[in-house]
Length: 640
Image (cartoon, rainbow, N blue to C red; front, side, top):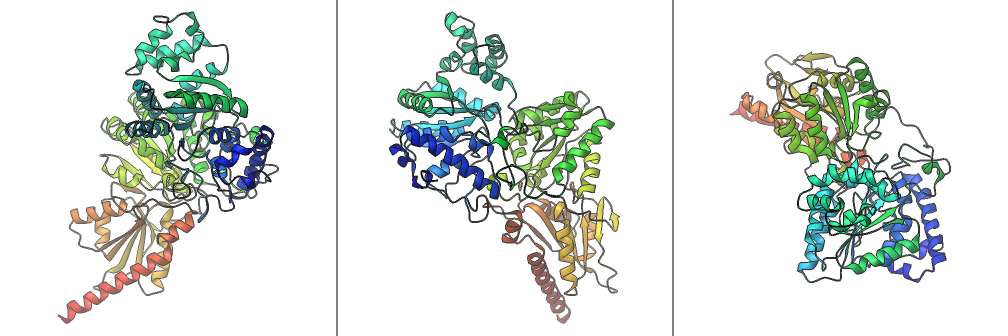
């Protein structure tokens, strides 16, 4: 690593010869494989952008010139070239983030790791530069072809193109590796494929008819142009004219692994003065044989692996995602009306087995969560039952569609939220801590939080039986624990532990309502309380929305209620239960334990839960104090 260790900042690249730059690229790939294999992380995307990132930092002067990365999982090379070369704790507490982080470096501008947003950020930054007189400060937005399937990217492009500002330098670098997680799909993907080759122009024009005429401001004009209304035959066979007629100068396609070609193209783009698209063809996983031969996702994200073989160092137990995937296949065989939807994440959300068994009933819509929800509404309107599997944090992007397009129309659509609650290592924007708060306001929606694999299977089946309202099933990231048996049922709630018969004239001490995977935490709390002589009933509500009708009556039989949930405290399950108790005029103190409403730094799930006090010892300590306080109040009342 003789060259890499000499790079303390981007300007150190200026002194290197072409031969040294090529050697540096090889050193960086070796470093990435060696270091990321120890910690896990986004390996394939970063192997694909080594030369591109080197070229960006040689041509542009970061941080004076703002370089932005869409999603940001491909920013490891950027970190290396901006002085951050200690990857020993990548994505762990106290170590480097797996995404850009403004706390780490002035070279990191944005850290929202949700896709398709970078062009809007770039549009705003470029406008600000123009208004402030910084006409010599280009903004560079690096976006993958997968992210271009998201509607927000096209909204931004439409506005960037409409500006026609020669004194608003904005360079859009399309990192075209034909993939987001898996191969990119959709009309934009087909268009980029056209640009990669010298054939297929008829397909391009067909895409133009279907897509461009629907684009406001410039779409119709562009379509007419491509049909020869304003230009000649040259533009029929030069699809880059699409970008140029949008007001976006197009350069490419460029070999994304040819440093000389990249620097030449980026230098031209820098000097143009207005919006420019530089179309770069890259290979995800480049230079690492195990990644290049992985057809599923080219090692998009890996756990701890053997660097030579790419095989996992240790095998994990069955995870929540695979349990869902297996049950979906079983449901697919039983019911022909079950269809599956994914937003460019077929494998990560566990739908690959369903897609293999029922390809015609599986729809990958690209990174387009809003479209996915309303498309599901259309499927449901015609008598099918769609199951949209998505990371919990990404459903935030489609709230209006859930509310107005599904719930308002009383449609049976099931949303399966993977990675719900604290996910940990991917940082603030990937924690699924918002859904049980956001979805509380949706009328008729029912929300299930299974505690184990058996309940996931059961509650998924219950969800797809609902035909007149949206249903949600949410579960955690990672390995699913052992089965947690119920000892009884009250209403629709499973009783996991009974407090026992209280002394005559007294109530049991605490009702613990433990949600989802934190059911085991609730049981551990009960054990710790029992050691202090405090009696506790533990229930799993199973369906947390609406609040079970039997819960207020059960709460009235206890001196206090404690809720434990893997979700933000504001507006979550605890808040909903507190409201239900007030409505039923049950005057019992309630203490809610959940995630504080703040953005959490990356760390392991266990570390974060301990840090925020969402673990059995911390909860038991506070509940013991609560019960002691209630006992003192009782004594004071008797004395009075």
